Image (tube, helix red, strand yellow):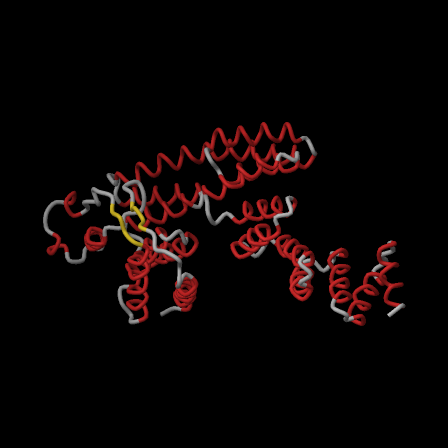
Length: 366
């Protein structure tokens, strides 16, 4: 096995380990206008296009390339088992291109699009003559809104099999979405500029236009919710954040914004849960760390607050307010020398405020 293959397998194993103990197992519908998961026909197509087992296939081309003609309902567990089977085949030196393709299909339906794309890319690199490999990779890029890459994959599928109905349809819808996406990006970008300038009414109109074109986009719903948040209209903001989460249960920024709303409302337990969920989903949302620190401080859980503030400061060492709060945590915990180090570090940075002076004076009394 190559190092590149091993790296992908290691990431897939980490994904499988992370999802163990899931509360419940969903049943997933594999739709006609998406990746084909009918393994029997999938393998037949591979055999045909690689000129392997041609006698075994028999019949006309159309029969050999017959696609699944009905939707299937497949449990998450079956997809996981498929992935585990293919990992064993790869590690045992089995048919690596097909194994990566089948793992990519399974990961696609489990919603793990980045890993799915990496697997399907490997299947194409190993065996660049299978129309379905390119079509499925295009579907993965489509879901990720990588329109240019998706178009390229569907076109390659058609170059290999010009009558591939799936690729024709997918290429057409990708071209439509690409056109729409340019319009959406225009209105979202314009809305963001108005928002930064403080022109909330104009920003609201732009976000509404983007949603009108693109449907219930989590990003658009979130941005529109942030307008209402800034205007103090909590009920409207909450509704939009909830809709964004409903559209994409893994959309971290919506949980972060809902957490900020709950914090403002004084609903600290809910705020902490939402902020924690946001950070688990996207570790780049560092503000969630600081806000969870604030909540922990309100709870007088100073060791937890300290841990969260220090984690935030590690990412943003320039944050003077966080360093001040770290000093406050140490002070509350009775660790005066550690508090002094934090406050004097601020003094050394040139910070001169009444709040800092009061804290240093307080330390002199201890």
